[in-house]
Length: 257
Ligand code: PLP
Image (cartoon, rainbow, N blue to C red):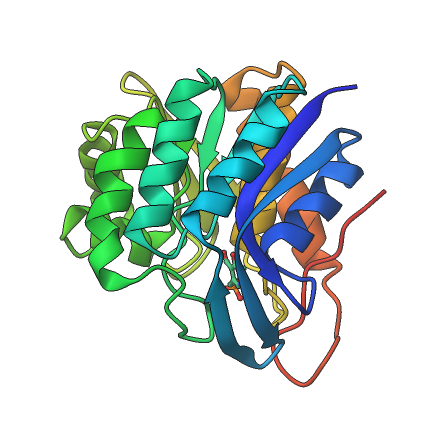
């Protein structure tokens, strides 16, 4: 069985973060493992509090896995602070990790900062160059490039700039633009477009986490990148289509086992 690791934050209400990742891994028939970077107290209405895990313990969690188990792919989600980012970088280089999906998580949909502002640079300089694929949404891509993104042309320009920062591929998610949800994959040579109709639901908590976890699972299964992203886009579209009306706020996507 393929083995996939998530390095991310815990979400009490189970729709995003580690919990979304492990559900996604299970739904893809791969064996899921987790390194927890932060514990959040949150529900469908928002994030109430965050406790970052000590970088030393994060490093030990990563070592515990790699010293014992072969990892076929991993994803990185919420990383909070610069020290956490540097620890992850050092451990991943030390363990010579291949197939890294980086979801550059910055702010929750409810508006809570999941990455400290002063850690943005650390994320860009330390983790982007390690990524096999990085999966920013529009606001994250605007922060990384320092440029506004208003249309598909801007998306392609931003993808080029982000690629120049070191990742092997960029998947820029267009869900924040109006109309059809179009994601652009750029590998330095070819732009590929993945489209899905805009779905009429407010229940989209954890969509970014689920998509990046799905890509990691598909890469672990030796899928070629374009095929992996295509399959993951189908998965997230189906998961949003069947999203759950749980709680009083933004409900989670649904996973299929
Ligand atoms: N909580 C954790 C631990 C996350 O990693 C994320 C997103 O990456 C969120 C919450 C926010 O999820 P959303 O913005 O989809 O509500």
